[in-house]
Image (cartoon, rainbow, N blue to C red):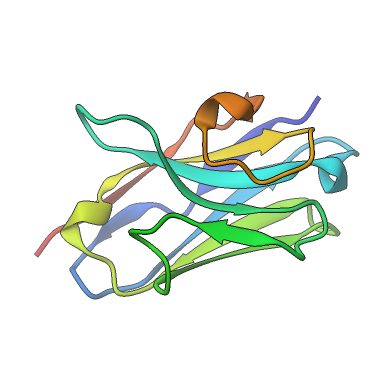
Length: 124
């Protein structure tokens, strides 16, 4: 079983950058597809980015493409989300997620494990 812990959230101004990290416990981290999702108040959980087991395949939500970059370090059991040019609409709780099956889906229901989330607020 893998446990996920996110960090790096905070309050920033529009246009700023922020880097989120997710540390996973467990020895089989390299076998999991990982993803970042976000959820704003009153909205559904939204796919942000995903990365394959090896890191060779990445996928991004349309609203963050070109601004956010997902990466992973299997030796460190971690993934990161570099967020640049942040906008107010990026404000949300960001969740790290993992799935044991292959593929990088955008549907949160296809991820088995979730962290507790970290708040990102983009405000002038």
